[in-house]
Length: 139
Image 1 (tube, rainbow, N blue to C red):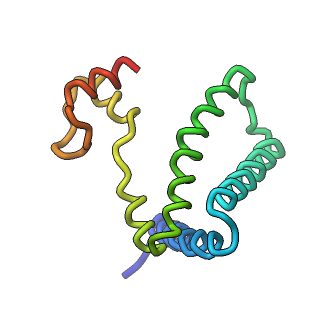
Image 2: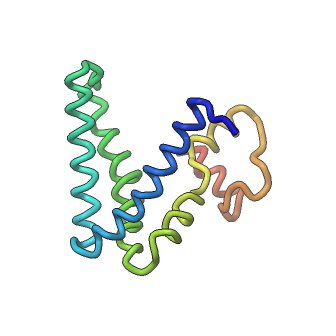
Image 3: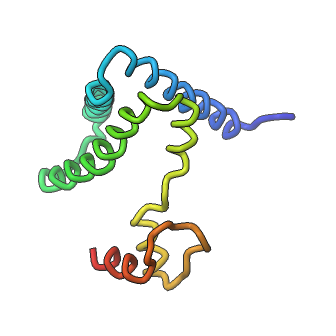
């Protein structure tokens, strides 16, 4: 069996992503989960900002920073905070599998709805579908 470049990159991604969960489990044994998550993401954010500034790709308008703050709150703090806390009670393998089963994102729902298409059966777990769909579409 031969692997092309994409296959090797995929295996590398799997190895890195898989070991992340082991690292999280080890980290929360020493540091409180929310402090560990906050430190991890603040460090990663600082590194990404520094790399972006050095290579000249940091071109974000000042008016966009409030949107990034709100997105960070919902996508990072309210997602990974409970995840790190929950790992106090489950093993890293269970957490990895549970996290990989995330729901369809609202942006994907909007794109499908705007295109006049229909989501596959059981691809969302919103109930009742009609009222939730109308609410999300208005947002």
